[in-house]
Amino acid sequence: MIKTKLLFMWIALAALVVGCAPAPSRSGAGDDPGGQPRAAAPKTLTMAVENEPKFLAAGFGDSSADKAASNLRLALSQRLATFDDRGELLPMLAVELPSQERGTWVVRPDGTMQTTYRLQPGVTWHDGAPLTSADVALGWRVMGDKDFGLSVSAVTRLITTIDTPDDSTFVMEWASPYPSANAIVSDDVGPLPAHLLGEQYQREKDRLMDHPYLSHEFVGLGPYRLSEWERGSHLVLKAYDGFYGGRAKIDTLIVRFIPNPSTAVANLLSGVVDGILPRTLDFTQAMFVKDEWARTGKHPVAIAQPTHWRQVYVQFNDPRPVELLDVRTRRAALYALDRQGLVDTLFAGQSQVSDTFFPPDDVKWDWVKDVIARYPYDQRRALDLFGQVGWTRGSDGLLTNAAGERVTFALWTTLGAQYEQEMAIMGDSWKAVGITVDPLIQTQAQNADKKFVASFPSFNPSQIPIKQDQVLARVYGPNCATEENRWNGNNRGCSSVPSLDRANEALQTAIDPVRVRELYRDFNRMLTEELPVLPLYFSVQVVLFREGVTNQNYVNQRAIARRAARHSIHTSRRAKLQAATRKVATT
Image (cartoon, rainbow, N blue to C red; front, side, top):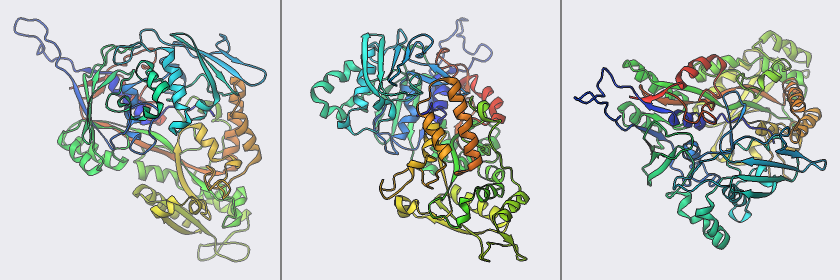
């Protein structure tokens, strides 16, 4: 697995609320009649989220409802490491990250490894207990315990033991090479509070999933602590005075559960809530609220952030037309797509066309930008390539193959206004060069049938989080969805490019930075030349807050200050986001 770039929207939100500060007083209004400064009034920020989580504890729950907890988790807890705005790795709970140069990351000749971490001093749980190495060891044991049936990642499975020589040090033993052993940026090893859960795990682990810690008695490590949880209504989070990075400036966060988008819009416009967490509204709905606020003279904070890579699966297993197996056909199909039109229509230009899965503000973009193949909108080039595979355009403007049969692209997509609009634009682009388009909007039942989904004849748009490991899995030949694996393979189109597969496999174990860079260059070059999938654009979600919410500063300059909300914004929007994230304050 490769290092993942943390660009999810909740990272941006965590950075936003952690650094909130009260607005300055005006013209001495904060002074009492005797001239002494008055204490600043407590600050409260109310936010809406689409679903109520079942668990707040890291690593528990994988339902759609528990994705809401991900939106909150960095406000409530912390991880060993994180990425900054350009994908550079930084320590968070760790003092420093394992390094081969310093001898804290050892790679042995047999492929096994050892990494040594030291925890930041002075970090405490919300009940005041110190964070210790035992908490990390417990987190790893629980996350990997098959009795709980948790969705564990490769990180958990690859670690064979965690030794704790002292309270601040833990040593991980790895079964095989893992390139991101120094980049544990998710909840793969917790931590979990051993002083609260350790004894029960040892004696009554069958009851651990019912422990109140996992929900309404959650105790975390973040800048905010859980103060109140009214089921079906809201959460109240209070600034934690003992947070190792410094006390958050917003005193209280109220998170309301509003699953109905229309209700969320009404609450925003009426002032009941100050802003939204990601996924609460889609892009169009969020922009409607922003425009309504602006129409009344207000100046809201609205930041569109790419979160997913939108691409098109190409069918390689009995494709129709069969010429899709010819790379010239796939290139022509991409040249013929007005992808900028897609971005302009779906996201008002606030996203970007993608050439590969790295956004241009990712540090790895600089590694690959000079080797990737690009396919700007060019109908003449598309027609030329179609001609090379034997397709000709008749007087009626339609393309036919060598047998005189009309060329048809089957275009399948899922339910949803954005996807259906996308289908219409893609279909119009292909029709403009003479392709007949046969569209299908999959029903919920069809979308749940993995065999049916894998049977698309030509093209099937999809999107995945901008995480390299997920991208690699989608274009890896052995991951083809088949009857043998119950149609669970991530490679839905069954593409198989041997050279791409070899680079894919090498990236799973490469550790040397020079070698990793070379492999990324090779992989992205082959990905864009062979086009096992067609890149479209980066899907965006919106962070939206009322006027008066700005970014003042970040609390922990060591680990939080560089975890900017601008992490995954289009390069052209970076200046705007930087300005928005330098100051967080509420009126």
